Length: 355
Image (cartoon, rainbow, N blue to C red):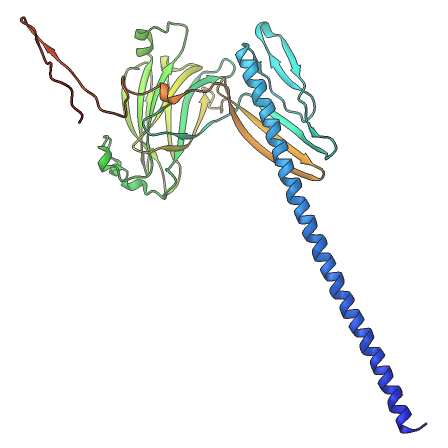
């Protein structure tokens, strides 16, 4: 064989090898792009299904909320639902009970539903996202069963900014002017009213009402209320470090103990955020509350995607603007006219001017 033919054969083999290598590389690139495309398509589908599952979970909450409103307006109560299966128990007068079937299917063709719905009508804490400055939030504090409260604990956070509790009026037990308040925590005002069978006239309620001004500081001042209502207390609350929760516990003793109260909560100088209320009975066990909030845990499902949300549904909605801490509220000017005596009466007849 001549040298020219041998060289040509070698060049042909090299070309085949190069071609094979290029085909393998191109195939790997194509497979890689296909996998990326499939992954992106799956991620987009998962996001879509996750969104559908979330809205399905919200549908479960909305269904329960409507049932709660309808039940309360007719004088009934919501029972506990601890299982993902079955309906929602409804308790009416004279101990009668029934079950409401919850329609869990949102879209049968797309396999969208809320697959699990749990309801707790007696949560062991009450949480209010925001108690506005100068406005009232009235909270029914009804202990389940026949237990009496031995203490109530209030916790709240700052208005969203980092706060140094040592700057909150330096721990002195006095209320400063608003211009001297250099703290991002609110002072929490609590008007606690005991409700019992001894009468609910104005005089009776006055004799069973105490007011607490809970001031943020690094250490707490102990508080104990006995039979001596009709008092106002100023106490430091424990906010150990900057940005932490403030905690204040009111111990209840003697004739002040009971199982039913109303707490009128107001933020002073700032909005009080994430206000949480817990209580303990005379055996020091954490109590459950009724007639205030229902804890709803809903899981939505869309094919193989699950989303779970937990919300608190208020049993009764209080319009805080109808409950001012003063006898008159206005965003405009106030004009006062006076009549003086004794006879002959002198009346100030000047025309009111804006201030």
